[in-house]
Length: 119
View 1 (cartoon, helix red, strand yellow):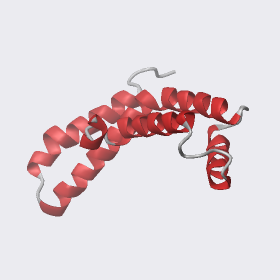
View 2 (cartoon, rainbow, N blue to C red):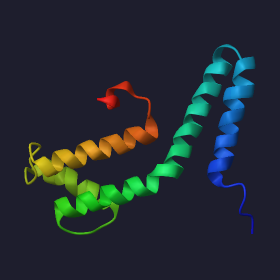
View 3 (cartoon, rainbow, N blue to C red):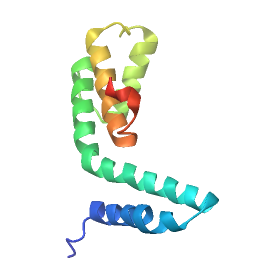
View 4 (cartoon, rainbow, N blue to C red):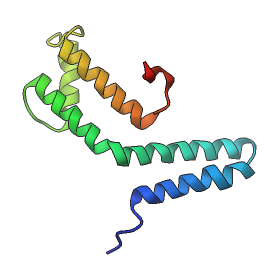
């Protein structure tokens, strides 16, 4: 069984190669696509690092809001239906806290340097 390198280490190594070795030598559209690839690998790396904990806390908040356990995607569909149906109002403090925390967690994975998230 192979334990090393981990998936995250592999992703980080490829991203490091793209950013430090390949991109300085590339120009134009190829350089742009290398930057896109490096950014995608950054998202994958952060998802590997933060995704499970983020999903677990999101699930816990949804269980508290909706009053029962289910898979995360099911809970999210039910949350949308509850908001659409008016059983959960957008001015509900617990809903607002959940939406803000979920958004922060998703930004931390997708765009951790997003300036709007610093507020």
